Amino acid sequence: MVSSKLFLITKNNYKYLEASLILRPYGIRLEQVPLSKEEIQAESLEKIALHAARKAYALLKRPLVVDDSGLFVEALRGFPGPYSSYVYKTIGYEGILALLGNSGNRRACFRTALALISPPVEKLFIGETCGIISREPMGSGGFGFDPVFIPEGHGKTYAQMTTSEKNAISHRGKAFRLMASWLVRRRVYPSNRIHS
Ligand code: ITT
Image (cartoon, rainbow, N blue to C red; front, side):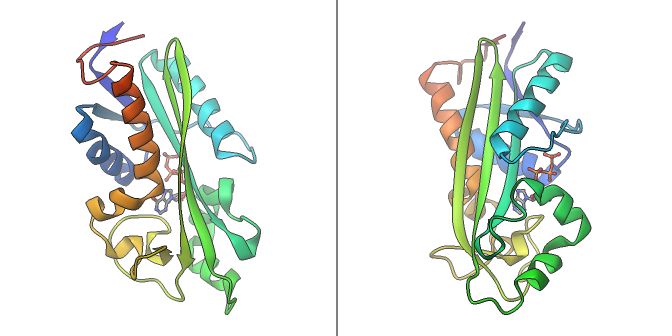
């Protein structure tokens, strides 16, 4: 199979938008496949991403990437971490604020594990950005926990940033740029042919 595109398996349109903008300068064209990721219960984002990518590859037989991300809050011993999706759907960021209460330790990190499958390649790329959980939600941009996360060295939440400001410093930006540099170094891109 020869194709010029890389497929991102996600139902999250914001995630797709962010990833496409990050990859654009590298000449990598991304296409969204809005399949549900088959998520296993696991304690690591890497395992979840790789499992989902293998399942999706078995179905699509196309070069693809899966992004599994999570928010790790220090005072909650890393919760919600790999359970971020479920926690977001159930208690939302308001629930995280409530769990933290007046805690003085508001440190948290966002992590992304990217699983790339383009046989014979199967590879993981990790990105992490740390910061603090705000006292109240701020901003209306972005998605998920963005309104309550203030990255270190910045006086505002992800949700108060433009997409390109967020991408420049975010966990997702770091992971996708690592993957893009790797693909470009291996000359898979920006050639318009990717073999699988
Ligand atoms: P897919 O599984 O379809 O890709 P998802 O939104 O569920 O979409 P994740 O499992 O990677 O993706 O994300 C877990 C949770 O973490 C989810 O509720 C997101 O809203 C949240 N999240 C992920 N990346 C985020 C980001 O950059 N900013 C804020 N919240 C984020």
